[in-house]
Amino acid sequence: MNKRIKLAIAVSAAMWMVPITKAVAGIDVAAGDWKIDFAGNVNAFYVYASCDDGTNTAVVGGLACTGDKATSVRNGLLPAALVFNATTRQDNFDIDVTVGLYPGINSSAAKGVNGPGQPSALGTPGIDARQIYFTFGDASWGTVKMGRDIGLFGKDAILDDMTLLGVGSTGGNSAPGNTSLGRIGIGYIYTDWEPQITYTTPTFSGFSASVGIFQPLNAGGAATDASYTSHNAPQVQVGAGYAWGDPKAADSLSGKVWVDVVSQQAKASPTEIVSNGAGAAHSFTGTAVDGGVKLDIAGFEAVLYGYTGKGVGTTGLYIFPTSGSGDKRKSDGGYVQATYKIDKLKLGVSYGISDLKLADDERPFESTSDLVKRNSSGVVGIYYSLTKSVTLVGEYIHTKAEAWNGNSASDNNVALGGILFF
Image 1 (cartoon, rainbow, N blue to C red):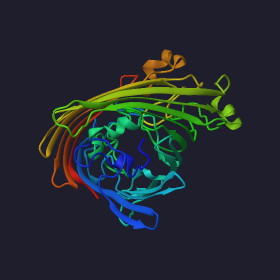
Image 2: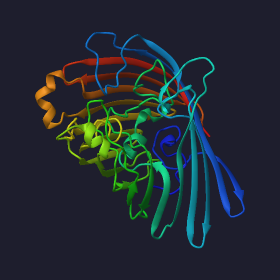
Image 3: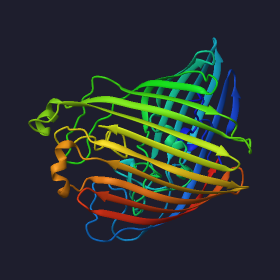
């Protein structure tokens, strides 16, 4: 990844969602040997959700809304952002420091800015300080990053998601939090923002690679799942990719391919060994691999992405990774997306799924399990570049959640709004 990541997930080729890793705009200031940049975005959407008010709709881990219809004015997949970045060259090192603050427009509840919101009088939004890191390196040997930033596994999947500038699946609309889901849990596992020490190679003829150690994550999910919060080794992530061509050249084929791996061991604490019960595994290692390809030619853009793993769960890393006995569940998913640009207008369609298999010891009880079996969604989007800074967005989203016992829920959402980058 480029060492000058400004908005990372928030910035994606401004108007036409060609993912990049530094700001397309911003306010630059020279201060001695340092170049200082301020950049960010603000967005808002009106979302109408027709939720499923039928029977047998309970799905643990399901991402379709249930109950009454719901309207909201909310953020989309991106929160707002104000990102401070400073760079300099000292003693043959390129040095970069980035601090990113990501406020929402919706009032936050007690669970924090990434939980459900609380649309009550006298509320205030929260600030998600998800980017805090520095880098040092040189074009001849690469870059070392230290701090909190976007992960490697699943990064390209969300940066190439067309709903990045829109809403996608809401994950609930009656009490909106800082962001919607887009395709999180419905096509990819969320890459997340994690404390890390990562090395990235220089780019050699289009090839680059990264490897890092990350803060290991606690593992668990449903009340009946085993819990693992002890860690004696870091989480490891590795990514590699190859890019070719110039996406700005209208009549030539350009694109990229990539592959990533994430793995970590999680152990039960002494208290969890007791609470998990006799016979439950004391530790497990969860590993997943993903990969994708993106192609651009003559206004057309296509993305094909997939992932598979065992013991990594779904929606977020290490959420619902094991059964109550610590037996690992398998995860699979991916999405396909096609867009076409006509002058200032971009049209897109996207479909994705995320599957979670029952562990071996859960299969005899499949008919009684309301654990999520599949989350899926289809999205049709219209993205219009009003100016070089402002994009107007319209999306129709259909989301469905299915459980192993046959329960299911689906919703139909319409989102209208816009996003501004500076």
